[in-house]
Image (cartoon, rainbow, N blue to C red):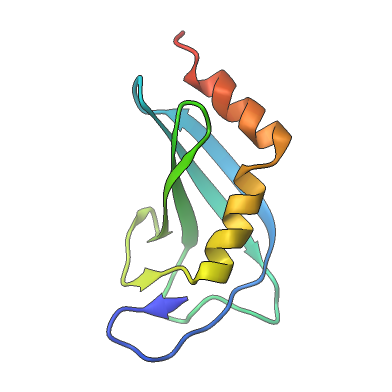
Length: 106
């Protein structure tokens, strides 16, 4: 993770994801991911409850990946490696299927 205004960079290793997928509108699907981190790469002390917000199109294309602290914007950003871990999870077949299913109007 990279804290805005800081030169310190840490790399989180994500062991598991806890997704909550919600259709926002006809164009966007929001995915809030709970993150289970490796004990070897703990969350920065400044963050209370880290989650990731992944904004996708209704066909599962990732538009944005942002870290949240207690559900709100925070002063951190994910590194490229961390975003790649999240992207690999989102691109799994079962997650893509869940995104497509959430995009169907009810």
